[in-house]
Image (cartoon, rainbow, N blue to C red; front, side):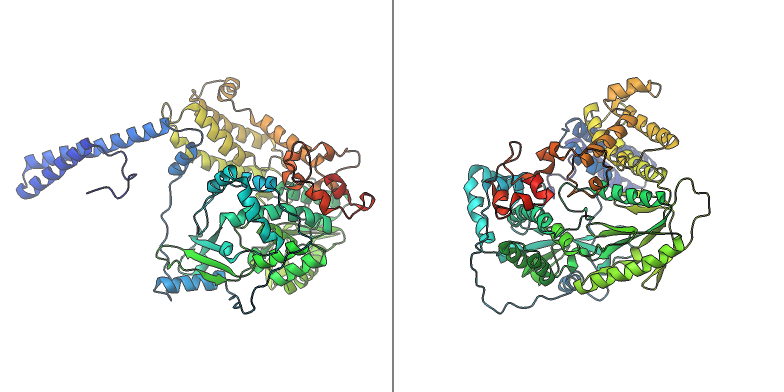
Length: 633
């Protein structure tokens, strides 16, 4: 009998086949004779057989680890973590694959797209700016070869090779779609991978699953080019709010969290009590209304060809759900913006930009669909009343746009200063008939916040996550065996250090917490070098080529401060809040750090795109340009 797969039991050998035959023969002999001598022979054959299997597995695993390279070591990490078997979908009210497919479609894509009745008429737009070869090359360079392809199964690696051998192909193939403001229906087909959500009590309803959308790679190349152009244009014409920090070039979670902590500390210095509920938009990308999005683009003066292309991109989409036993048929769906698209986050951010009203002695900050509303007054109870009013105001703005907040996921925190000794406030807030008490710790964007803004809670969580990751990968290299030291160093610096030090740009650990972090880091260094526990720590750090955590934390904080100082204040809300005595160094910012904004500028360190940005603003005099335009142009 042939193997079901070339990779099944790679450790198997002819010796094991011989021992297995001897074991089965001894077993048959004992069953027929029931003799004590045959029983002892069976036990001996069984011990030899299973001991040989264990030895063969260990030898194969050791050989595999010794042959790993820096690029393939991550495959070993996946093997050490284990892989969960895919779940077979079964719903009580559906007993056929077609019924399960229909139930999933009705849950994830509730609205049915209207049938196409009017014939399609296309005409070129005069305000179109041609795409350049450099823009397509840059979009391909940002695409990973390991990304899963769409229904056509053509990966990014194929398109990169095609572009290298014939660069004029994509340059002639994609621009007509923008020129006519149309996205082909064949490019709007997608695969929907159905995955189960971890930690659910039962999996008998579609709520316990999620869908990952895989679009056509050719479509995603064009979407990435348009996203680069539209992100720049959105800043220029006012489609974005200054307090939006998600899915925008040059911004990160640090900018959102540092802005929040700055506003909290500033209001506390003015002797105000500050409170903040953390809100989340329900459905997010699925609830983007095409008509309202296009209306917002037209109202702000976006180019007609971009508006038309966005409208065409969001219509007549087809999705094929993939799960065990799925019928694999394409079905028309109408649901906001596809989550696997490079341009969908930007379109969603533009769509929710009106949800940032001006709050006296407060602020609304968002990161994609995560919002935080901060208010201040003389007491926390007064803050609760203000928050309820501001929440109703936000709901009144969101309702016409088809957006709602996932109220059950709301968390409330009453900020305090480290010097306060009074009992914490227990005043809760009532939103949509649900009552929320203030919490001691709140997680937002991967940062753990406490009322006094202490760093201990955050680093305790990060230390637990790092220890879990370390327990997984240290099995790859037990003492004296396994991976070579340079691969262990790669895992430690690329996996453990980012997990452990996430948030170190905002927080500085206290002395007691720093000692706990150092103890864990010393364990990692000993694992990398395979040294004894009595090895001095300075020698250990040198041999492992892993600097002490104090230096790594200081480096992260310096780099974060340098990035904020070098960011344009028109783009980064954290830069706007710097003191006037801090000089702005945005002119020294490397174009490589802002490639998606500066790609259209003819700079020596950024690919030239034929002065497309200059033509974009050619009808605007330099004296009337905004600061962001002067920075870019």
